[in-house]
Image (cartoon, rainbow, N blue to C red; front, side, top):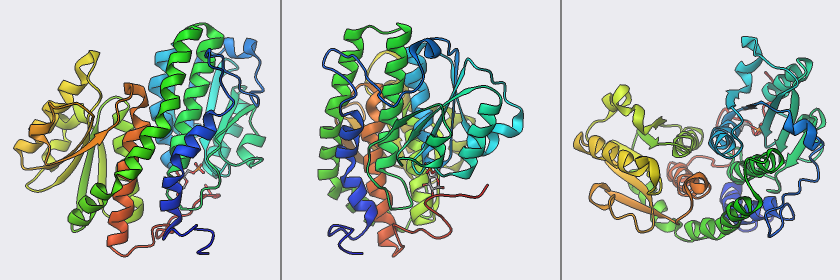
Length: 371
Ligand code: G6P
């Protein structure tokens, strides 16, 4: 009803606006100023967690992209090898699991059948299962050894928004908790990462406040039949998520690619006027920013219309951006928490321009309870 939508035209718009709160609530009460983490529903002991020598994340759809983001942070902070797998593929390839494997199932609804069947299989193989879930008492957390709830509040729109951001945050809390238990990061390092995460809601708010320029861009591009998204490092899953949102809501061809993979195939798709979003990593070591900028130059030379997401103060991108979306400055690993927001706004407005039902896209269900 209109009242439930709180004056918004779509639940999705309301839920996007709730993202600063969703992130803040997922962090709330879970860490001290000194970086000590406390996860009350973590039913695995520190000894059990110290035994973990491998992490396998399983999820579907948007939740699987939260998992892909998390993999970078988990391996970087904990030095525990981590892989991410689509739940629907997981148990059919005879995966190698034992009690030192931690399977992390990510699910907003907690009812996705593919994910549920995957965790049942994992437990039969003696792996420990921790779920990251937004729905209290749902089936997936009930059947897990431990749970970290995301506190995003109910998500109604089929396409996930605040669910996604809070999943990334919950995965980061898990990663930092493991780092704390395993001693791969010290309290002050953890505290400084958490202090950066605490600043993220303000960054998300700013991007929401600046949404008009993204909506105008969506209106300008609403005649496009195909749009590409490029990213590197954690920007790669952001690109996948930006493309998925557009497929789900606007029913147009959209694909996300790793920017470095362009030359191995996708660049053949680039033709005059093709809109391409590029998420540029913050400037830093590894030269990821420089390498992403050369990808932008390559597609632009072939006629792409470039829509560049880059942090404040990154002036290197200016000559190559047909359209520039500024992101607040955050550490690389946190960039998905801000960079995803303009892509959500874009997809929503694009679909709205085409007259589609933004909350209930055709052929999709919020929670898929069949395999
Ligand atoms: C469905 C929804 C997607 C969602 C996926 C996983 O396909 O349409 O938006 O990402 O399920 O849902 P879950 O509840 O497990 O996170």
